[in-house]
Length: 306
Image (cartoon, rainbow, N blue to C red; front, side):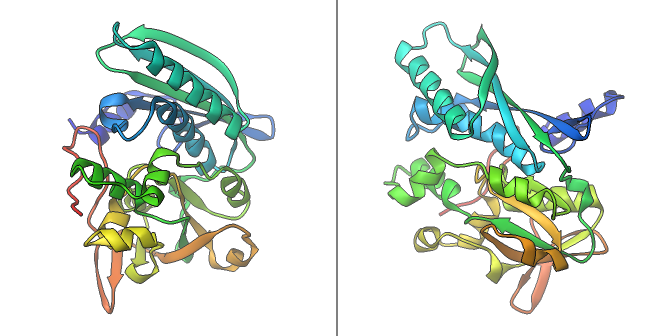
């Protein structure tokens, strides 16, 4: 079964839950307690151009990004660590240093942990946060503008170069090794945007997540995509790479047109929300349905080349 099918199976059996967004939520007086967990598996998530320190920081960023996508401020980090019996002390020290660095970057307290044995190194992280107003995938409205923070394409380009055994330029490698969650941006968006999601599996896949959850039609424009200049110099189809590139940890959000001028963050408008269903891309004068690109566990990887 694919990842999405497994998630759907479990959700059908849960009677009381707040699943389906980047983080779960519980009402706490006049705020929301946000809870998320995100797992890093060495074999699939840590190519050898990354260090154990990078992996430790990354698992913190992965979880903090989920809180940011809900419009919350992360407060704490917790994790469970499973390792083979012969794991080296150097690797463990590196992971510990990386988690500590990540907690300092995002001003988090490390509050809990567990250790177990497994055939691979697995770091199952989690984060707690507080939000005043939730940003849900299901709240995009016709008339909203579709926007994204930062630039796209570098993490996937780094992975593709690595798979071919080619040298990875520093600017490309930088975002793959040390991505940053958009915490301040998420907090500012919480009072203005309607919906949001973080780009962990690829822009294309995340657009479909919002469209399906909100039961709306989304149209993006190819020429508006904020593709990194370094990606354009390297790959043959930078648009496809930008659409498929995961682990960006940028925020994709929809916002009423009249509220855009109030935003004081770095972002690009890439499209609009309409009534209807599906996700479409405008290429010149032609509009076509957008292929679902990006990463899904148990689905055989990403069908993208340099």
